[in-house]
Picture 1 (cartoon, one colour):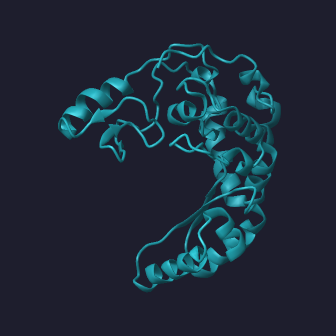
Picture 2 (cartoon, one colour):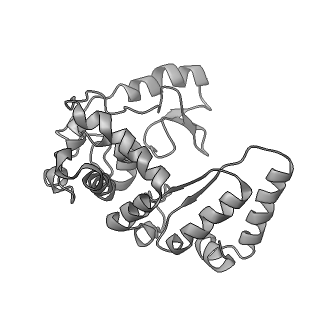
Picture 3 (cartoon, rainbow, N blue to C red):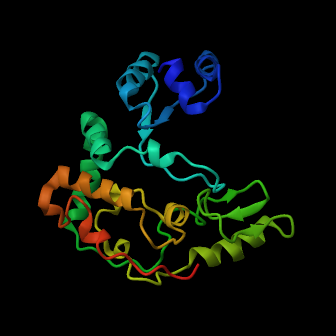
Length: 243
């Protein structure tokens, strides 16, 4: 919410003014608008001001505090920008509506007996969503960069029905703690994020795992059946499986 902070993140002089002007043009034309930010170590001190700004516009506001590395494998500062788990959970708790949503998400699953998952991909990737990269490869999702189907050599239908369907049907090949975790509803670990961070779709992102555990500890304490530091799950890392 200040040019200094915004342009420290974007590294583009003048981008703050252009962003605000763009928001105003969208509103002036009556286009439905939602605003979202990444909660970073560099901008978290302005989060309350961001919320006040969106409230003054009468538009919904969201934030995401769980970062992924750059997909191009170039120099990345995401570790410097990632909030530590305690700080992100504290930010969640400060926002009553968001925290209530998380409580409602956890309540039904903590009462149920954890089921062991068979398929690695439990999300919409390859089922109702897909991604196409700059080289024309049809992929399960924007984070998963391995494999894919070359749309320059075949049709979308072929790629969707054959390549993506085959990739989506992958079953677990390791004893990953994610297979039976009852906290998945609070966790942003997913096959794509896992692959990008660890190189393996079945190895969880440690910081995401800890964030989920600290959320659960703050909501229900020991009743979650997990430890806040996630050592219950991260203490026994799975053996990386074949790609």
